[in-house]
Image 1 (cartoon, rainbow, N blue to C red):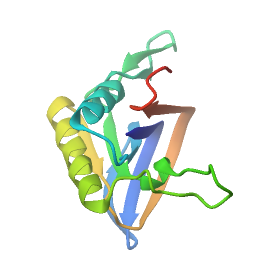
Image 2: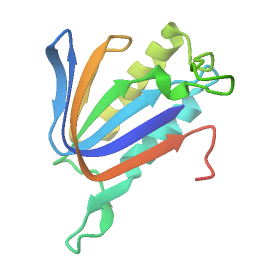
Image 3: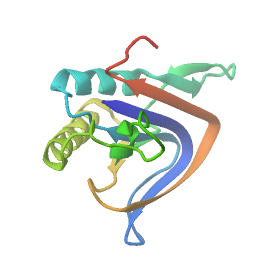
Image 4: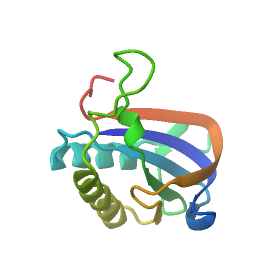
Length: 150
């Protein structure tokens, strides 16, 4: 499982030009589900996202994790599993099938809502979405449950 996490001052997701989710200050989380992922991968990703210390304290040091005054916008993105090993056209054969991906995406949304006191918004799994975000910093963090060394 892979998550690309961006610290934002605003983020909005639209489907067919209609807003379906938006947050002010918080984290925009793109989530890609690997075909070998298990619940333990999701639990690890959620723990990392909620524990990320990427918000500034009173000394302007990135020392604070996300709080109730922030939001999380979760967006499914199977292209995070793209593989360029052969040529220039990405292969997505490592991504979970749509049914498995939707299951883990819905479970991620449920776990975020259960474990986070702030607003949790989401895109629509499998939809063609338009994302508008204003990065803060910028701060962008890559989290990969298959490569926990960094």
